Length: 336
Ligand code: LMR
Image (cartoon, rainbow, N blue to C red):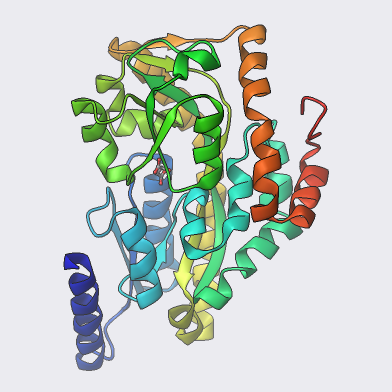
């Protein structure tokens, strides 16, 4: 209720400010939940700088990192209501909008590498997915990378059985919920902003994320083990309030599109290195033992997790999923 009030208040204030200062710059509030030095945080700042330069100061972008404005679910509502103009939620969080096709990105092992990922995000399927947001008052602008996920916990994880009964924090994705259940774990959906504290006090035993997110939220300080499973992917869609976007002067919109293309190239260039650097920093911190799996151990995770594809197919859409398999080269029943 409190945040709904704050949304309504900020819409009111923005409207009043707009009327009073017709010549002031167009303001884009870009809210996100990660640290400013995480890949998404850096890309958001990059976009802000380029948007201001390319529009000659006609647009000002205010970036709010670390859920300082809104946490996960709230930020989606704030965008639809127009209290913020731009977000880049992880692809796992789009099913709260009823866009469950986005769950395809969470399917275990769906992308062998970034090349397979790009075949989806930079092709017709990516466009189709972004178009699905329009009836919800949202315009999709781009896909930004983060990386492949590892599992962390306070006990060593080498085999699926090691997760039996472990309470694992997850994002709001049915696929990820089913993935944890397939491993025998107990999934707990929770906003990203609450994860560090939940791990610290033991509300949950572990979690999953790319290394850049784990490190920049200092989760390694409260997790004794990190297993390099690379069992799934985490990336983002950059989205704007459609009414706001459509109301922009055409020239401004064109420059913002250019700024977004540049920011997307930047985001997708830095993500891999940022994750490698974060893993090196976690190792150097000495708080967390990094576990590398043998090929046999990897195969055991794969066997445990692949059935999740079948249970998710009806939500994602059989036809869309077939197209994704074709684009990525994933073979559903042949070990991928
Ligand atoms: C999470 O909620 O675990 C992350 O996906 C947050 C983010 O936006 O990277």
